[in-house]
Image (cartoon, rainbow over all chains, first blue to last red; front, side, top):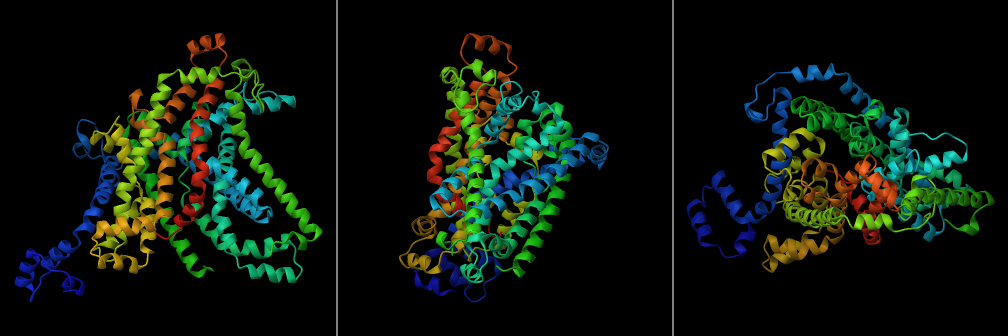
Length: 328
Length: 293
C-alpha cells in the first residue's frame, strides 16, 4: 500500500479488499485496486482512444480490400480474396506509374526550390535592423499559410486566366501572346511549386529564425573584434550554427516525399494537364471515390502508405541520431 | 552586436539591399490579395478584358450584390461557422482530458497508448478505407460526421501532452493536498497553466476547420450542409462554363471573374480580422510543435 492511500479514509469496498487480500495480493486484484484508485484517468483517456480506434484503426482493418474483390453488398469481410491481383493490375497501369513518377518529380522540385526559400528568407530577416519593418514584413509573409487551398487556387485561376488574368495582361505589355497556362502540361509544375513557395516560405522561416535566435551572441561579438563583416558572419557563424536545424528539416522533408498537397493539385489540374500533374493521391481519388473501384484504389493507397511509412521511419531514425550528436 | 553605427560601408550596403529584397518579397506576397480585391470591385467588362492591375476599374459593387443575394452563400457561411466552432469544441473535449491522462506517470500502459497515438502519424490507411468506414458508420452527408471524424490528430495530442508533462509536480501535489481529484487538478491547475499550448491547439483547429475542403466535398452531398470552401469551389468551376450565367452577366455589371473574386474576399475577411490576435500564438506554437514524439 502506498503512503498516499493511507492518508485518506478507505471506502467500504476498499476496506473489504484490503481485509481479504492484504497478505497475498494477486495481479488481478492489484489491477482492480489500481483502477479503483485511478479510474478518473482512464475515463479521461477512453473517449480519445475510442476515437483513434474508430476513425484511424478501423480503416486499417478495411485495408484488406486491397487483397479482395470488394463488393459493396458483400461488405469488407464477406468479399472474396484475390491475392495480389490488384497490385499486378496497378503495376501494369501506365497512369498509376505516371502518378508515382509525378509525385516524386513534384516533391523533388519542391525540395530543390521550396526548401531553400524559407532558409534564405530567415537569413535575410536576421539582417534587417529596423524592428518594426521586420515585424510588419513577417506579419505579411506568414499570412498566406492561413489561407485555404480553395482560395489559393481561386487566386491562381483568376491571375493566370488567358483573357482576364493579370499575368497575361503583363505579358501583353511586352507584346507576348496570351497563354492559357492552366491547360498546358509544361506550366503546371512551375505554377504549383511557385504557389507553394508563395504560400509557405514565410511561415517556414519561423523555425529557422528560432534557430538563429539561439546562436550564441558572443560568437558575433568576437567576430566584430576580428573585423568580420555581416556577410562573413552570416557564412561563418549563422549558417554553420543553424546547420543541424537545416539538416533535420531536410530529412523530414525527404521522409514526406510521397506527400504532395493533393488538395491543391485537385483544385488546379484538369484532364489536359494530368500528364504532369496527376499524383498518387489524386489518381486514388479519381479511381476510388469517383469511379468506384474501391479495391484497386485501396491497393494503391496501401502501396503509398507503406512507402511513406518506410521513408518516415528512416527519416525519424536519421534525425534522432543526428540531433543526439549535434549541437543541441 | 547589431549596431548601425558600427557597420562598415559594405555592411550598410548589404543591410539596405537585404531590406529591399525583403520588401520586394513582402509586396509579392501581398499583391495577389490586392489584385483579387481590385477585381472584385471592378466591372465585369473591365475584369474580363484584363484591365485590372492594382485598383478597381469602373468601380462597382455588382459582384457583391450578386453573391450576397445568393441564399446558398449565407447557408454555407453559416455552416462554416458551425463546423469551425463545433469542431474546435469537439477537438478540445477529446484532446485536453486525453493528453492529461497520457501525461500522468501513474497511468498504466502509458507507453502503449503513446505508441497507439503516435503510430497514426506514420501510417495512414488512406482515402478509400477512411471513406468506406465513414459510410459504414452512416456518417456520409452528416454535419455531425464532419465535426466528429476530424476532431483529433496525433500531433495536437502530443503537443499538449508534452506541455502537461513539463508542468512541475509541485503544482499537482498542492492541489492533491486540498483533496482535488483528477478532473479538478486538470481543470483548476493544468488548464490555466497551459493557456499558450491550448491556445495554439485551438488556433490549429480553427484554421483547419475554416479552410477544410477535401473531405467536406467528398462526404457531403446536400447543398444545405456544405461549408463555404465547397461553395466557393462550386462557384468557381460552375461560373466559367455556365451559359445561363454568361447571358445574365452581360446585362449586369459583373462577370465570373468578379464574382469569384468577391467570394474570395468575403471568405478571407474573417481570417484577416482574427489574424492579428492569433499571430503571437502561432510562432510559439510551431516551436512547441517541433518536439519529440
